[in-house]
Image (cartoon, rainbow, N blue to C red; front, side):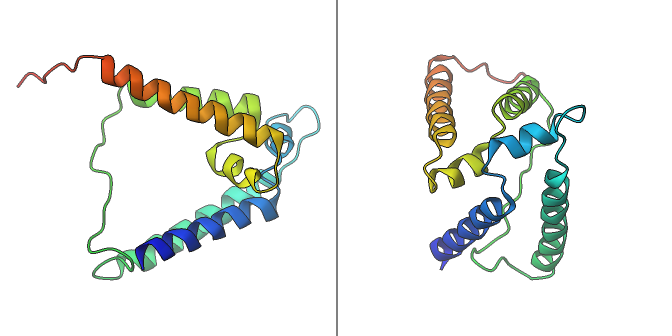
Length: 144
């Protein structure tokens, strides 16, 4: 049941991105250009996502266990470090420059959008490079 739930969730998410037009990078870039051809539709997509998330969390945590897992799995770390800040900055720069983030880029692959193909290829290369750098960087033991 878990894989089916993941598939359906991804299908709903990707469909929502496609229907709202968020697979088109110009929607995001026009949102980020309030002095030019400003397009406020991204606000409504984000607000819709926020409402669904708030309701979903309320319904999920009213249950004794998740629908498709044995236990709830939530992030435990609350640390704000250089990796978090750097990653957030890189994500924001990439989103602002390309008009795409991972979800819409992957959904855009279905339509054969060249922007999506280029973005996903660059994202995969960045993932591989990050893994290679992390594997070659010695870890420092935490002082206790």
